[in-house]
Length: 382
Image: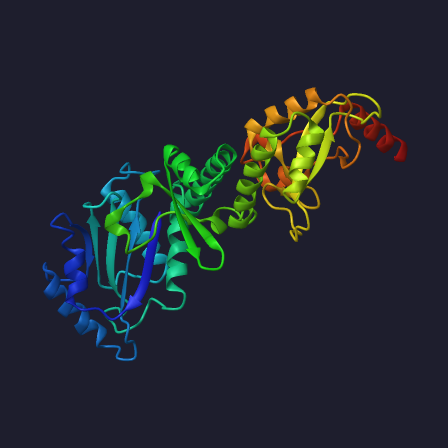
């Protein structure tokens, strides 16, 4: 559940807002308040708050919002109970004045609360230090106790879905305009940011179903690319798109592997060939994959698609380019042993993907014969 909490000095407007919500607000709980209207309740709270003049920000205000994943399945009483238990965990007692209102006018039902940090005996029971963080942790604890998904767990699921959809879209397209259109078909909005130096420099992904224009000021929907994956960066996506465009152009003017390699090299890129099984000289060997890298590239770390010292696998960045591998393999009478990429397990793609992309990014780079040989060697070492 999305949530927020902060300490501040309030006026009667805060209570009026809580009790209005375009005329749809429903007060579900109040404590130590005699008045039924916001103005009277504010005066009562202020009178109690003045008993402890050391505390300037005497009110605790915030909200808890239900996500679509929980929807409107919770009854108002259950929703209220979550709020009350979370507030109790940060110091609210039966001696504190408070008002809780359920708001229904927006897409997501949510509870707003106004609490007097000063109890009726003049004691400040709610510490202000890290209150937003502590309240968030309290809401999660209560959700776990009740068997409900927390905002963190929901966020993990959404990020995994976003990453899977994004990488699938990257494999299908070769520019940002088409990427945006492809993601829209999948139910996501891509928001790009840019600067003069780098051009496109950032990305935010929002689920269309999560858009809530009424609460945009309270919290921003979606996640930055850096929050979704610490491996996939904008610079890498740019490189993937550039690579695909270069490869397709080189392919149009090449009838065989040699011509393709020459065309690519003229554009400033290197080519490494990965054969299926053991490479045998003076024989036609089946090509498993082709790896492209920019000559003189300063890239030193593995990315989501990028493999250090090797480059980009054509089969990994674009499933359609697999046909290029097949056609070039068939048109090559003798495979060139220069720039031969030894078969080995591609740790970067397997580990970085973390299972989110499924099998389509997990090719086996070790031939069956080599695998059996490795097993025998391990047994001999024991």
